[in-house]
Image 1 (cartoon, rainbow, N blue to C red):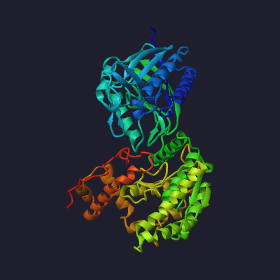
Image 2: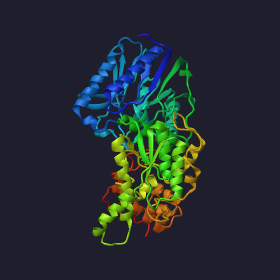
Image 3: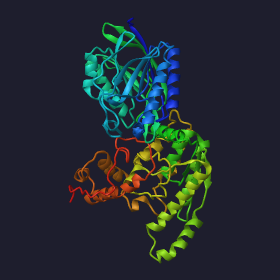
Image 4: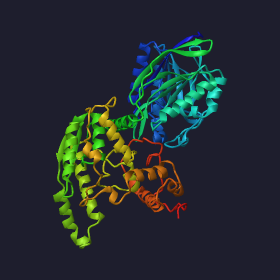
Amino acid sequence: MSVTDQLRIALAQLNPKVGDLEGNLALALQALSDAAAANADILLLSELFLTGYFPDDLLFKSQFVADAMHAARALVAETRNSDVVLILPTIWQDQTGLHNAVVVAERGEILALRLKRELPNTDVFFEKRYFAPGPLPMPVTIKGVSVGIPICEDIWHPWVCEHLVREGAEILLCPNGSPYWTDKQHIRKELVRKHATDHGVPLLYLNQVGGQDELVFDGASFAIEPGDRLVIQGKSFESDFILSDWQRGDDGWTCTEGRVETLPSTDEAPWRAAVLGLRDYVHKNGFEHVVLGLSGGIDSAVVAAIAVDAFGPEKVHCIMLPYRYTSEDSLRDAKDCAARLGVRYDVVAIGDPVDGALRELQPIFNNRPPDLAEENIQSRMRGTILMAVSNKLGSMLLTTGNKSEMGVGYATIYGDMNGGYNPLKDMFKMDVYALADWRNKHMPGDCLGPGGEVIPQSIIDKAPSAELRPDQKDQDSLPPYPVLDDILRSIVENEMSLGQVVERGHEPALVKRIERLLNIAEHKRRQSAPGPKLTPRAFGLGRKYPITNGYKDQTVG
């Protein structure tokens, strides 16, 4: 076997779709063609590329497994007329079970098979439910070079990379399906930096990109050499094809040519993640345009702006649904926001249908004083009308409740919670304000909306209100949002006891009340629309508490 001192490695940072074996195979074939045209020696695809990451219970379907195996063999066969060695992550079934694997293919043949050793079983992925773990992997000789291929979670456990290097690996190539959340890119780099330093070999980290249900994969693939040298940095929130040249010297392999992109700031990243998550959810589920209720408030204005950035203004339809309590300010602000974004804007008054429903319900309500029941009829009438537009025009309905409101149940089930997707699901209220202010001052990359102040400052400045009764304000029944957000963040994201939350300076009675609201709203959150996971502890996918829950935190009397 010939030995080379030079390698050209291609990282295909692509956007697969779970279950779409045919579509993912086509993406892989195009990447193989691109790699051949670029005279690459190695092409690496991201984790479980052919099936998409993560297939969940599709993996219990024997026909799906058989079809995925067939697709993998078909792709292997396509390497027969190429000098490119393909590293294909996919599922693989053998006598020991089903595996998260990589197939290394050269000249139409399987050169090697490696199985994922460490299976994640926390947060959002539960691979032990589906896969059998492999043994500690051995390096693979590719064009005379000993290459280690740890798969995603494998690099989070030091012994896998230690074993590979001890067995002679000169360079590590790691395929990943790692979802975005705040500061995740920094965490990944620190991990890879430690491996490169401790083991004296470069590590190339390839991550997939795209939205898949509630997860957003941010790409941002990179490589770090010993000596803490970032030598490759791919794009964030976009597909990318990353070529790099490597030279073997006395001190091992070094990158002689690699592209380093500038990553979005920590302020821009959540916006880009929300845009990508929405765009892919809508398109991958067969929709082309969206509709939402534009109330004149901050949440719906931000959702409208995210939607326009995702699809362009011609694909976004905003509807104002006023009732007698809707203020002139809200009517003006909604119209102004729609005009700035350039979207279709309609007004559908709900006075007659709400009043008609109240009139018909009067014999049952029997002159009881007005309360939440009457308020919720307004919200549910809006939800019904928006769903009718969605059905008639084929637009996906977007809902607009933020994490703070969903945390305490400040949303009407079967009303303003109606919708197929919620871009704000994992954003606290103050995060929404911060993003609105940021978007008005910046034009994010890979976005299709207009620049400038797209969200009227009057919407940002006014006190939030559901406008379901005269002069209603959110803070009539909730604490100020900075206070509410801190309490919720402490309980939800940091799992603090109530006593610890009180120690942060909050009133004990308020903390107990918020925890109670949080617990009794679990049934609403279970029925809420999916939305992009932007933090480590998103409702639903990242945090699932029992609906029927008798636990009482006694750390506050």
